[in-house]
Image 1 (cartoon, rainbow, N blue to C red):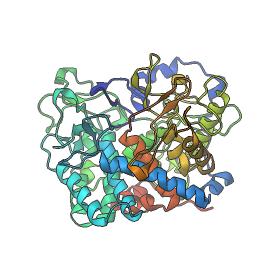
Image 2: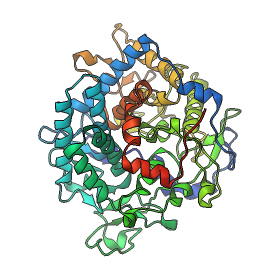
Image 3: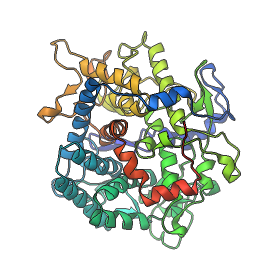
Image 4: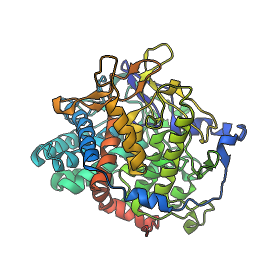
Length: 506
């Protein structure tokens, strides 16, 4: 699953609580009506350039004790991605309590395998066998791709379409996250893994989805739509039969969108690639909170919109990009700097709200979509919103914190994230037992997906696209492994050249 269209399947039914970038597209017209708020004053043309403090954060040195804790947290994340899989296919579950697979989760699963091998948790032979099982299953499906793009959800064993519309759409962002993970596995294992991944990449027709205004990419193809109902029912020769492109499109410069276009501009077949200028046409709206540094904001301000692409693209080593290289007016943005500013701002806003919510504190922060509890205490998938954002409003969701938000932000906020991870690990219940921790040495999955001290609720579930980014992010700050693998792939190299991305020099 992805974090922009639909939430995971609670009670095995799709939640239609649309979120993040999907909200952007459905509700963008509201922006013209939303009044400017003091907390989110706009600075539309201000460049976001690397600061000395961010260079210092990139060079942060973790203590031996930090390393031990990070290793344990990573092992817990890996345990989930390794153990919670289909018996026949090896495909990872969307979430622990689900009976389906999220293709986005598979991307994180495939990237987890080199980590597991290098950390000594599995053998290289076992990692290779899992990668081949997963890739062969997906590549052999007859109904799980449209124009080369995978379904959002697939059957846990066959990798094919789920009955009753549960697969939802052929999703460009889920396919993107899968592809990024597959690229790292291809670089690490080579051989048949690389051959399958190369074929899947070669068959991805990004251009087919460029049906929105100005050639922007649709979020996907919905097979449940009748052609007359399809909002973007632009005819194409190979689009016969029911279904149509969904209206929501990728048009905001937050992490998922940038990763989508990063891959789409570099398609091996020129006729399948999109215009590199589209990457720079993504909306770059700059806002700030009070006197904190400004940054390019996402739709709802959720943490994942500032770290997903960073799991693979080594923005730490890239300078600010420049829309003017493609004749487009917009701010230059150093995306590593941008995400650091965004997460420091989110932490500050959590600190300011600590008098309202018991869960929040200087070392307990981080809002990102997660399993939690609704106002009635029932299990639910919750999506917080925090200004500054394009929505121009907050939705605190009772102050529920997702530990993976601070954990995955460790790439840009190492000191602050490390303090949060220590605090989460140390929390105890009334009997003095760990509140959020399931010991990975005993097969546990480490930190809980979310918690709320006011509600006295700790999520019993785990989600692949929550555990996955935290595993990858921590590995990147410890060894840079995933960054090196992904950035060395021919598609990533080609994307950097096409987009004229330049190396950062301190």
